[in-house]
Length: 310
Image (cartoon, rainbow, N blue to C red):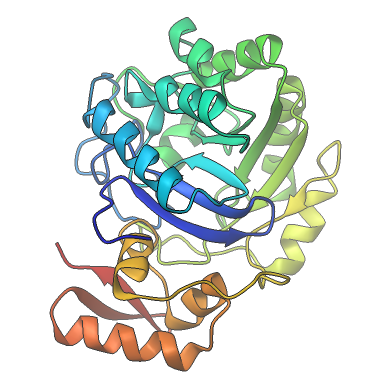
C-alpha cells in the first residue's frame, strides 16, 4: 500500500473476508457512540449529525489509483476510525465498487443510524453488512455504548429490523461481550431474543482482545464465549481471537503498519499474524517507528501494544 494513500488501508487478512481493503471516511474517533470496549480509545464527543467529513472525490480518486496500481483484494470494506454512516455520501464508495470492480463490498456499522431511510438505502448498496447489537434495553445500551444524544436503543433495534426487511444481501450481527456486564446467561438470553428478531444471516460473538477505551472492561474467556454462543439461534460463531491461516505473506513496511495501527492498536505478535510474517521482522520496524516518535509503546496486561502518535 502506497504511503500516499490517506483514506485507504490494507489489504489485511481476515478470516471471513480474506484480503480486505479498508476505506476510512471518518476522522479519528468520530462516532455516534463512545463504546467502553472500543480499541481506538474514548470518543471525545459522540455525535449523531451526518456530514461530509472527508472529501468524497479524494476518496474515489484514491480508489481509482489503487485499482490502476494493484486492484487486488477479496473485499473492499468501509471501516476504520469511526462510524462510516455518519458520512452523508458513504454510499458513493459502495456504488463505485459495484460499478468499477467485481470485488464484493462490506459495510461495518454500529447500526445506530439505520433508522434513517436514506442511510438504509445507501447501506443496501453493500454486498455484506455487519451491525452491532450488544445490549437488551436502554440502561444496558447506555452502560456499554455511551451513545450520543438522541441515539437510543429502541432506534437502534428499529433501524436494524427495518434494514433487514429491505436488504437482500448478507447481514451479520456482532454481539460484543463484556465480562460482568452482558456476559451472564440471563443477559445473553435477552440479547439473543432481540438478535433473532433482526433475523441476520450470521451472528458473531466478540470480546476485548485489544486494549479497550475503558480500562475496567475485561474480556470474556474463549470457553465462556463458546457456551454463550449456544444461546443464539442459529448458533453464533466466536470471532474474538483467532490465528490467520492460509494467507500469503503481505508486504510489511512502515506505512503498511502505520495504516493499520492508526485504526487498530496492536502488539507485534498480532501484527505479525495480520501480515502472516515473522514477528522478528515486524518488531524491527516497530522499534524504528517508536524511535522516530511515530508510534508509542505501552504495556497493557503484560503485553506491549503500539499506538499511533499523531
